[in-house]
Amino acid sequence: MDTLLDIGEVARRSGLAASALRFYERKGLIEADGRNGLRRAYRPETLERLALITCARDAGFTLSEIAAFLQARPSDTRLREHLAAKEREVDARVAQLTRLRDSLRHAAVCEHDPLVECPEFKRAIRRVPEGRSPRAGAPARADGAVGEHHERGLPTAEGRRRRPGGGG
Image (tube, rainbow, N blue to C red; front, side, top):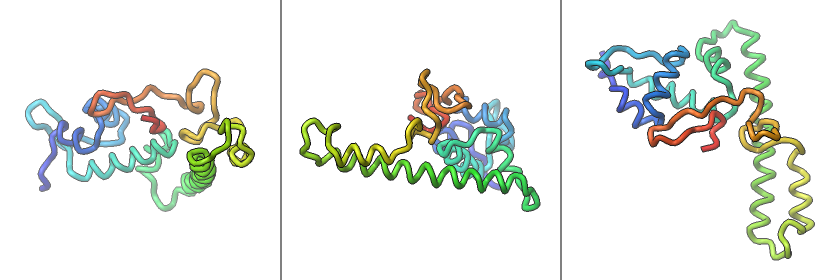
């Protein structure tokens, strides 16, 4: 049997707070494999699952989408169609962020005064789709929330709030 990792060790290695691990456990995304006294203990493979969950969250997946993906079977055609659609969304987001990066790269060396009036910068910015926020590829909203599934940020091991879309 593998050596189990204490919840504190999993939190340290994953960069997530213990409360986030307990939250993911309540949602069925991870599973404690035992106890070390009163503290939960996890198999080492849980770190890989947490890395996948974090990556998917940063890419804009909801927890319910992640849960479905973690239980997917090859015969699940509906889920496969959904994953293909998500892949197209991620591709579009990567293209959008690449255009934004190129715009910022130009602005960093541009001599135009003021920078925002530079014709090349303006042209590059126009290529970034209107009405879209580059963070999490979600529609920009007047209230500052990201997308329709704005969720409360999860605490990290350092005590900061981690936005579900990965924004810090």
